Image (cartoon, rainbow, N blue to C red):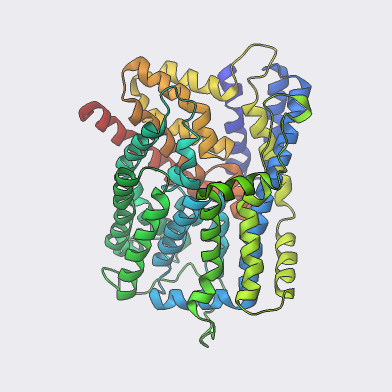
Length: 529
């Protein structure tokens, strides 16, 4: 019974969003109420801990809404300055094929943003950009979420590994680099296929014929791009360590993808544009804006993100100058929420939007109009996110109870370990996904479950690095389906209320990714280590 109740944080959202197709505002509110009720009546959580957890979720919602606003205001400003039209024309000159565009924009540019920022930022940036390029909103949100997976292990300059595994007894810099090498090794057999998976999703769900045949001509090129990412990622992990893998690998693959696409190398001759939304047309009149000027705000975003994360004095300044964090909420020790305002990707995105007005020599009113449009898009999203994150934090804080029970996530992990230990390497990535599905963070998933993964690996004699690498990759794959990422991704493309439709499309890729990683990890650990 306890296991079923602990799983309510997973079962309830699945029933309400996926099966009953409730909008997130309604489905997540009911899910939160159910989990909170069980937390009080069965787990024995006190009212003070419950309320502080709800406030923690509300505060965390503000941090996500700020990133959401930053992503939207940047895109809307670039629409108003004409930069989006120029970017679109630039893509037409590289490849007008939407199958190629999803790989370049969502997978590779998204990986670059992930490597610099993490924390769900890529889908909030690439989703709206895909819409601006003519994609249907549902296609844009689905593709953006699935694309933001292989790079997540190395997101925010290696945070999911360096912070996520920090509570493992053997944690040190060398250990983190070893995990990075193992992650990239496993991803040669799984992450390489993500670009082709994006093409399959695009053609099957959003093509007129909904056929796999329309995806197959893209197989050679998508595998070349995928391998250029995962292969270079392994090289960079070995040579430089794990911090900059996503950034360097995405840049490498971007160069290869752009050059090969521009030359039409191993790409189909027919241009596929069946996912274009109704009424969208590419402006034929060539923009007077240069392509470098059009992309300059996004360059500013990447540069500022990297500077604030790798220059020590700037990191310290941005993390401390305007600190809106809330520590020990209502006096409950350990219940806190961080919001270092200047360090937030939302602030950097907003700064880039303001700078774009000057870079493109437009009136400041352009930014103000974009801000107004962005705020109007976010109206219902806050309700969904508050409910989702209230549920998440009650779930994760459930270890503070009067019944002396382990926290719900720990109870789930220990139950799985006791019954499935003999095939644990097949289970490990799914536990990572489970953590991300609920918490919305690969880092938090790994922080929560890595001690259990480490303990199980030692108990049954499995290679620790293989198990923990599977956890990290699974946590990254969980980005595809985690509720608050889906809520945010649907909001930025104007699809609030369609979260269940998105999860139904991203669920299978998430399961397949974890399954492949589990099988490959099992083979490597049992036959090669």
